[in-house]
Length: 278
Image (spheres, rainbow, N blue to C red):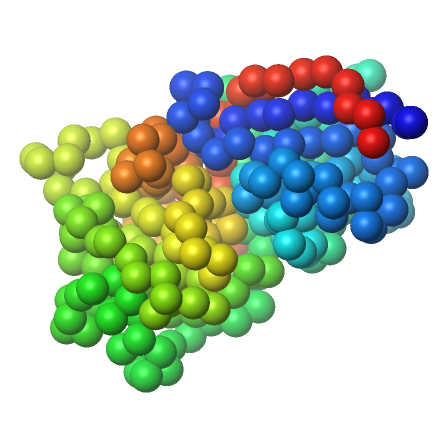
């Protein structure tokens, strides 16, 4: 039975086990699609990734990203967690940016002190959300439609729908009805009130997946939200988003716009390291 190096890391938190966990299998080129999907189903984490030799000449590594039920072309916290693990195995860390190859193409990653950050990929779909869908989302989050300040498609692989609420308190108070939201990926965002909420973040984010659970900290959603909110002037070019609060997590996503690029960053900690037999 072949063995592989394996790590489980925590992404988007300076406190281990307070972010979003990711399982990473290293040197997984010999595994079949079915092997990868079966292992991702077994870990039962939101995503499991597999590090492979790149096929693109400019990429440092290739990654495949699986949920328990399907493969994704791109996802945010798996990108940062996979880069963290790849760096831990690299004989020599590259100068400048790291280039990841994935189903969505090439993704640039940079080191920013103790954090890693990826360049947000272009949105595959943006723009207004159909009013009937907005009404269904409002019912699914148990709020009147009038409380939805704005909404927008934020699809960059996962087909997120961004929903802006008046405040952080409104975001935290939502109790979703997944039977109504079924089939939609809905991301809520609301601004902090510095006097009530403090100043360590400027927005609260929550992510309701199409499979009926809340994701702790979500890089792809935050990337899409940043492009939308910065583009419309709702958010400044640099801010911090908090996520996972309702789940007892302390996720912090750092957003920075440099030139034409929006970078989505966070800290990563290795929690488990060992070997895996498959």
